[in-house]
Image (cartoon, rainbow, N blue to C red; front, side, top):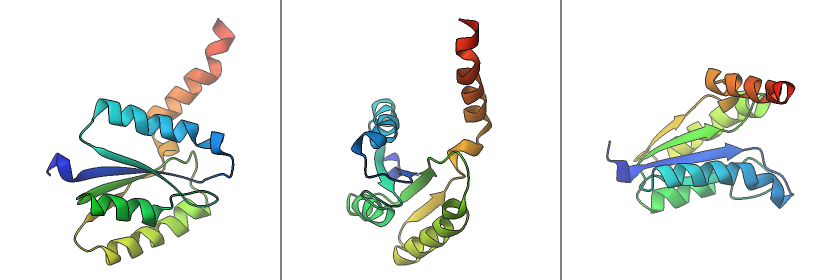
Length: 126
């Protein structure tokens, strides 16, 4: 895969509070700093923008052909289990020239679970 054609969309729930987005934007900034040639966008399911379709359209317009969608959710509720796979399938059908990969929710990754456990107990031993 040509790295210039790769991109990531970090997908979160969304909030009307603009401060709520800071952690997602910090993740995007860290990825961009480590991999400056990788296009990274944040998108939100509701309450703020851009939505997933808008973020995807922007990346496709910039030449992205291989796009990973990373749900920044700790758990897989109805939105992630049911709504998101249907939405991604519809976007893939609308953009047959690209490859979309929907990753599992980040909260299901053992590395994040271990890190959260470490953070949760860190102040006990200081």
